[in-house]
Image (cartoon, rainbow, N blue to C red; front, side, top):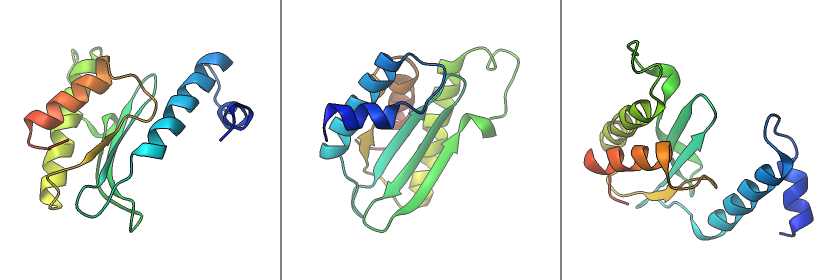
Length: 134
């Protein structure tokens, strides 16, 4: 995929500068060439927005979502509302429990072009501690 087509696909988002959008899109497409989920090891997708974090376990062979979690569904206290990293940790443990209930213990991690720091790293660490292997 050429740089111009990546730039065209990344133009749609509002609120982020064009160069940052294009850089994230390049990272995302580069990762998706290498990362694919199977029935034995489904793909764990993490999507991060400015306010929320979304995660799902997907079997790419069937095109089916096996488990999902997001910060929309959290039971929040006053302190958790401010601390997004704590919310990411809660989502990581919730998703690991949902994946175990669906019979999944090993996954392939897809960070969707996000850098592995902050909320994404906190989510991944919490999911590992709760029993997911990746």
